[in-house]
Amino acid sequence: MKKVLFLSVALCCALISFAKPGIQTRKSMLQASICQEDSSYTYKEGILTEKMYFTYNVDGILSQILYLENESETWVPYLLDIVYENGLEVKNIWSWKVGEEWFVYEEDEYFYNENGEQTGHAIYDVTTEGVKTGRECKNIVIEGNTTSDITYKWEDGNWVVNYKTDVITEGNTETTISYRPGLIPMNKTVIERLDGGAGISTMYRYNSETEGWDPSSKTEYDNYDRPTQSIAYRYNEEWIYTNKVIYEYVGETDALSNVKTYAWDSSLSDWNLNREEVYEYDGKGNNIVYISKGYMGGVISFGNKTVNEYNEVSQLLSSITYGWDAVAADFVTPQSKSVNEFDDFGNCTFFASYSWNSEASDWYATSKNEFEYDENNNLTLERYYFYDWLSSSLYIGQETHHYYSCEETSIDQTKTDMNQGTSKVIMNGAIYIIKNGMMYSAHGQIIK
Image (cartoon, rainbow, N blue to C red; front, side, top):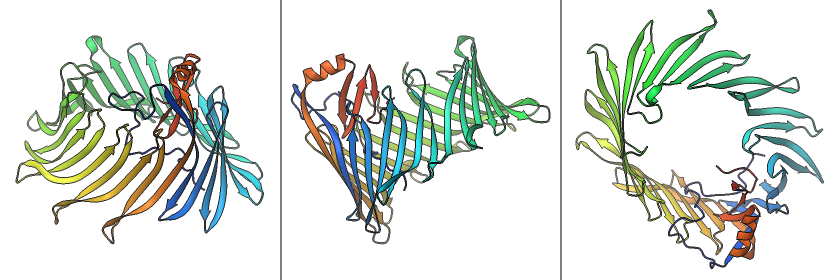
């Protein structure tokens, strides 16, 4: 039994924010609906293969999912119990049913810092006798000025450190050290911020014979946070140029407009342009053109150009990529295309990917997704089309139906809930909780 994504959101289209300008609401200004997904049914090539039923706790947070999988025309039940402490999801317990008895087969634990931000997790396999064996564990630990990102392995019934990366901050210097199993040093990076905003990033390799650090490369920035030039070196008894990057921006913003990369030619003692990136934006800051060029001998030898189109609320409608044509000396060869469609409420209703058929001089769809919503903007239908290479056509490969229970509430009541520190909102059929200024998923995890 593999894990499944229980709360579906269209991957092709970004989540719509609460108050995007121009997006309408189906409910009146005095009414809203609080909805919870009760169940979903998934069909694969017309056959019902999966059923899910959702249970919520008194705070409206998802607490249990019953999942039934059609295996050889027999419905096999699985259960996910979600455990919370102080409003945070701390454990997932996965069970399956044999006969009339439920057996736990996996437990997942989640770790948080004092700010309620998730720092890591641990996964355990559980036998039918209840014996737990660690499968995976990662955590971030902060002690003083050192932040450690640690991966553990299960050994003799306990978690022991396997790989570790330490980030040590001391004044204007940040040192990152990576360790392999046995806490043996591997690599070190030292970032020094200099007066005036400049910075140097130097990389070292650990020398086990001398038990010291050997320099390997470094990059110098004229401004570390917003560089206009960086120069990279490699070390071979002395520092030797390798490449240089020139950055240009849109006005005083951090949006890049041009990036040129040069390689050092030691025979000429000069820099040769070998790559260039160009960015163009519309008046709302959306990237409408991206160009990547590769050079040989000062002449473009390869590259591509992507042209993006957006609607009035900055949702991506289409993206087309063209390849470089040396004969035409322009980006005229179509390569790929994607198309999104949205309803008047900002919900993604259609997504398709296309490839270019050079023989027919036309686009052909390689995948297509369709989405439908109810009056409360809940996602009710996901339909996925897959490409059949034998017939060169699309077919409905998977379809999922979602069912909800909704209750009417007033905007005044929602404001009251927010004043008390908690409110619920619905985006693309998923429930989100706003509590004390933080946004949580229906699983209780913080949304960045």
